[in-house]
Length: 454
Image (cartoon, rainbow, N blue to C red; front, side, top):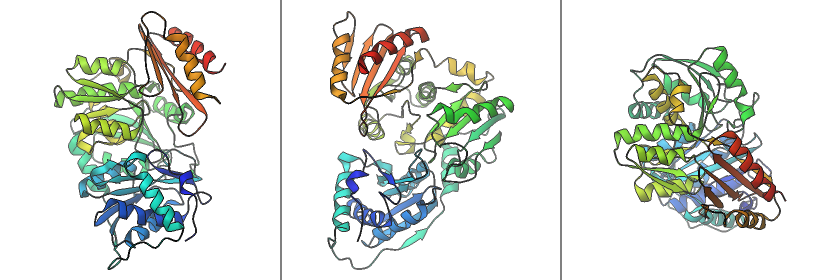
């Protein structure tokens, strides 16, 4: 079986590469066989996004899994959190074909164990990669009595019903909401989830088109929010929602068209979850606003700080029994969603909070936002360790300053902090700064960037 060097496309917690130059049907068929062997389950579930290459790659993966005697439930077009729902509700390992927010030429696979439990480099992904590479190299897998079957099953209605059970929006005041699906899977899931609710939905780019003809499906980049911001103001909407390509992340803008930071959303949702689960634990990654742990404590919860990244958040949620976790990148994790991330459920919490009172979103969000932030700033650096050490040396001896290396370098002072983290895949250092106001952020940002870029 011909194939590529899979070590080049297996990332920290997924598979991702250019199709067909780095990832093709031979690769995904081998990965399907390896995944089936790793999972050790009689049945696995597979879903895929709207990219032109997704159906064929997913079908090849299903063939590979079936060749190992494993049955496959094909849920067809899905958001990543719909695949997680299927994995949880059916208690099956799962594979989702998507490259999330990446350009159209890419595709990839997000894999999970039964119950949407994560699979990362240290929890199975390396083993799957090595076994798939051996199959591509001609290794003969053990014989099986008979091949598995592939059965189609549409789970969108069940997913929508489950979310509406978790967050009841039927009694909120009527809201007008603009939703930008970026031609991604939000255009598939939003109509069913929001059907029959007191929501007037103005839809932008709901047509499924994996070539992304209108703008990139990456709402973390401000330029991709411009159409949503304009539409919210033009339509006099109460808020706007922007989903990424596989609709597992959701960004929010208020009635003025101003972005609501994911840290603010994390704090808002945390308060709602703590109202249901007094004294519970809430996870936040180390570049989430300092307002998040402050607000969690003020509402009787226990904040737990963790490294950046999907697998670390899920591990900490399992270890601590946390009810909720949030990241600066707009990934939101829920205990009652199998500890998996779902942007849709976070959006529904925002809608419930807004629709349950009379203030506009800008005023409601202000209660959960306390500091100014730089956002993530990337610098291309040849010597990541050396420049990080230079930053540490410049700050660690200053009075009242503490440093830690949980994930990169975090330096904290009175009323401010910053974090410098190396990219795992590129020669970059990523800087995040937070302080009391914009002037303080700018001064600290410029000082640290001068050291990074020296």
